[in-house]
Every structure is written in C-alpha cells, then in structure tokens.
Image 1 (tube, rainbow, N blue to C red):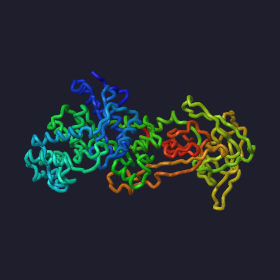
Image 2 (cartoon, rainbow, N blue to C red):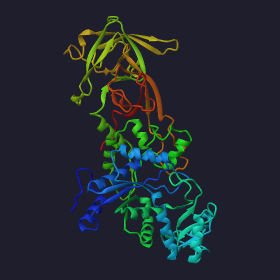
Image 3 (tube, rainbow, N blue to C red):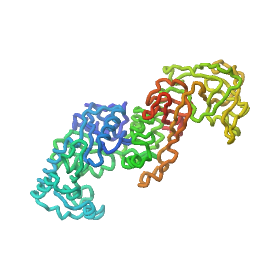
Image 4 (tube, one colour):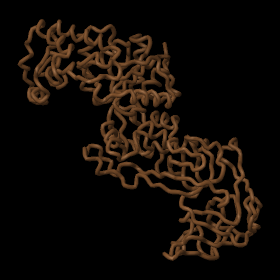
Length: 552
C-alpha cells in the first residue's frame, strides 16, 4: 500500500479519494495532469492547480503530465506554451510527460467516426444562434435539430468533407446524439467538432476541423492513463458528458473527474480573458507587469516560488467557492523573505541633511548587520559623513502629537550612527523644505554603550557621497473593487496601482543582480527588476510592505 505524505501537504477530500483508491486497489499508480490551454499566461489561480496535481502524484510515487489543450488555433500561440513551461519549472515542478492535445488529433477523429458509426453523433447545419434557440432552458426541454436523423452514411460523408476543408467556418458542426430533454443542458446534443480554417501552432494547416474541449479532454485523459482528472467546480455539470464520451468512444482506460473550488482573491483579476484585455489595451506593461497576478508578474515583482507553494497549501482544497484575502499571499512572501533578504537602507523621497559640526571630508565606516534574525548573513560597512539623505516624511515643521521623528530643535537617532538635532530649516522660493542643518553628538555613536539620554525616534539615512541612485516602483492592488462579475471591470482600475520614485540606496549593495531581494529598513521587501536591470542605476519593485494587519 502506498501512503500519502501528509507532512508535506495538508489532507483534503481529493487526497482522501486517492488514498481510498490506492487502499482498495482500484489504481496501482496515480497519474494526474495539469492541462492549460496555451491562450495566455498562467496566474495565481493556476498555481493552486499546479501544486495540487504535482504534489498529489509526487506524494504517492505517481506521475504528472503537463498537457497543453491546444484545440483552438485562433487564440493559441507558442509564446504561451514556452511561458507556461517556464512558470511550472520556476514553481519547482518537473513533469513526467509533456503532451499536447494536438498529439491526438488523429485518434480523436477516429473516435468521432466511431460515434457516427454507432449512431451517436451527427453533422448539424444549424448555426450557433439556431442551436441556442432549440436548446431549451433548465425548465423547458430542447428540440431536436432537423438534421438529427441523417443516416450514418450521410454523416460519415459530411464529416469527411468537413475534414477535407470543403465547407467554410460555421457551416457545419459534429454533435453528439444524447438527449435533448436531459435536465443537464450539457447533454443536449453538445458540439464535438467545429470548422476553423486557421493555422495551428504545431499542426500548421493539416486540420481545419478541431475538437471541442469537452470532447478532447476525456479522450486525452484516457489515452494518457490519467487516473484522477482534477478540474474546477465549473466543470462539475460536464462530468456526465465526460463519462459518456469515455464510455461510448470505447477508450482503453476509464479516468474519473473530480472537481474542487477555484481560487478567487480580493482585488484580483482571475480571468485570462480580462488579463489579456489589460495587456491588449495597455493598462499594464505586458503579461509580466508586477501588478499582474500572473506567475510571471509575481516572479518579476519579487515573489518566491516557496511563498506561492506555501500559500497554495494553506488555502487548501475545498468543494465550495470562497474568496481568499489577497493579504494572505503577502503574508507568505514576508515569512519566506524575512530570513533570506539582506536588510539595508534606502531613501525613496530624499531630503538632504548637512551635519554642520561634523568634520568636512571625513568619512566613517560603521558596522551594520545584514539580517538581525539571521546571523549567517554576516555584516557590512556603511558610510557616514557630513552630508546625508533622510526621508522627507521623517521631518515635520509642525508635527502632530506623538510624532517621534525629526523636528526643529529635537533629536533622533540615525540607524547604526549618532543622535542628530535639527537646528535650521532651509526652504526654496516656494516655501518647500529642501535641506536641514543639524548637529550631531559624537558621544552617542551606535554600539558605544552611551546611556546619557534617550530618544524615542530612530530614522535611517544614506550617505550622500556614497549614495547609489535608484528607482523604486511601489504597487497597490490593481483593482479598487472586489467584484469580478462586472464585465466593465476596467472602470475599477486603481489609478494609484503604480507609483514611481527616484531616490538612493547604499553604495555597493551585495550581489546586485536581477531578482535579488532586499529588506529596506522601515519600507518593505524589494526585488531588483529584471526587465530594467542596470547595476549603476537599479530599479527595485516593492514586493510587500513590512507589516500587514493580516494574521493566519
């Protein structure tokens, strides 16, 4: 008996089904599959399915196939195939077999011919609107197509002529002959094949008829020996059709379909159609824009595969739909980065400070730990001299109560350095504060053991002489409204979803490479943008702020 590794993945109803099948001997080897259509980039919802299918099979020594359901050449492209393969690998998974629906086009056609020969499929000349009108409703049975009683010979002839390209798009379809009065609308003579004169990314112009998903999917599963075909809940009503096709097409194996709740997240677009619209209309800068919930967008923003896998495990697998708080994903990336990211200082909105009683030309190199929670990351030296940058909002002329940062005539501690006191405020002609003149107390050096007095505020800084220019890209949720049912969702785009700032980081950040992660003191976790990489002028994407109100 094979036993699931519950230590790595929390138990759920699908895993329980798999264990029961193994215990009863109904299956000896578990085979799952992740079957994306290559018509767009994967998003965080797909990550849930990827983790479920790959980890489920892995934990029982089974196999997982990566299969592309490429049955619609109008919308599919090799770009999406390559992106999907890269995303699955980045998440940490390896497939046992790489498959395409197009691998089985010949076999699918043979099975369609078999259905016609058995009197279970017919060629129909109705267009899509006419079929809808005859389909009926949940309370009204459908009506038979006037072409439903064509002879087997006539249907075989028309199907072959469809295959040979004799008819234009939409002229004819192949439909299953099941039951136009079925309470399940999916069994009311569903379409199995349609005519599409379009070049396929793999088969080129070899075919001009293509199988519908509901016909192709069960055949693919059966050919590959899939034991547990895991789908989202919207396919639950399609399961009787799935079983009908497997049975009547006389497939060599009998896969079973199981459904689970798809992932829905607050303020997050979870539709490939809508995501493509965002890209096509220029709302975002491509599929990998860091505001996008695509896996490539999350990767570019700075999310780690570990954080996404942990998130997918925590949300679990349920039988009913629900909405997950997007802050939960942020929680897991914070947890993953807190011991990995170099902790350093960055100034996003610079305000210059001149320390008037500090010796001109002098530079001190102060000790600073790289990560106080992970001693193995070691320490570094940071520069300190007469001129430094601090954050603009670390100074206020007229502060509110309990404001413990810098004001005129008060002291704060500079992180890793000294106490400074603001003595003079310099303004431009517009009355804006452009520079502060301060003094420092040399007795208060960090680590010196000074106990003469205390200050309540600690702020960070970057030395002017050793500051490295940098760009910071700050993100908020792309959507202001959580309702994803509105087709005019573009009205809910957050105009503040991206804010670009230009400031400074410490000179010579360690290992400055694309995707390198940093925790900027008091700001949050940032990652080096790979698309705008310049070691002399780096661009940092905000992964997540330091704190959130969310708790597991």
